[in-house]
Length: 314
Picture 1 (cartoon, rainbow, N blue to C red):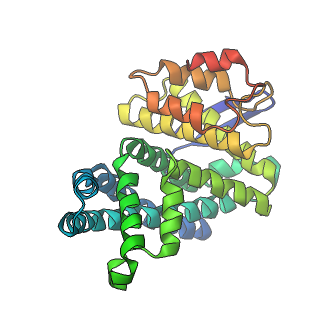
Picture 2: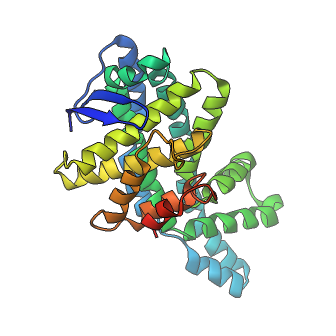
């Protein structure tokens, strides 16, 4: 996936030398951050596999509710405990991902605004990790959308704890009350990982650690690079194509939240029409990704967003 890529925004032209598969850290500082990110991202496949195999205990919960008895309630409780532990594991990783987002952005987007595109090149090992992070985020949220039982399990756990608190040993509470509240709020969203990344980026922007233009320019450049690779058929491998498509959609949606004007206005630095057309015509059809653009973007439903853009995904 390494190549020399000329990306033409509406306002600027940039040339990027990118290798998002084989790039390696070039300095000791980059290596330190790279290794820190690797420690977290190396767990992502395990998290996804574990989440894919998540099986709710709806049958036990329904029986405990429709045929209330101490025995049925206890059976449901014993069934739900390991599932809440699983959810706690996902939540812990969610928090690690949020922390990693800020760590990577702090390095990638620092320095002179005019040098942002050059930093994407010189720090492309970190960019590679950032893209893999986004790929994980989208794939996790895919699975979450197919697991409504997850919230039902957690709701039962909370109700049971509230009713039986005086009878329960503290060791029976697999998550603290504070984490319970945080987990409930987090997993209530259809795409919790993406929202977490967006919230982290908005908070990071608010800290003014790096110039705001660095952040938006870096994100828009990445979207355009992914579009270029896909539109110009620079990638042959099916899995790598999906990797780029997921990264393109995630970065587009994130940019739409982070940039004050969003992604869908006339002077957007992103080739939005091209990205949406590519997504709409992708074979096989990617309805989940289309839904992420339509329902997770900040400005998609704005009156100022052209109907001609909206029509592409309808």
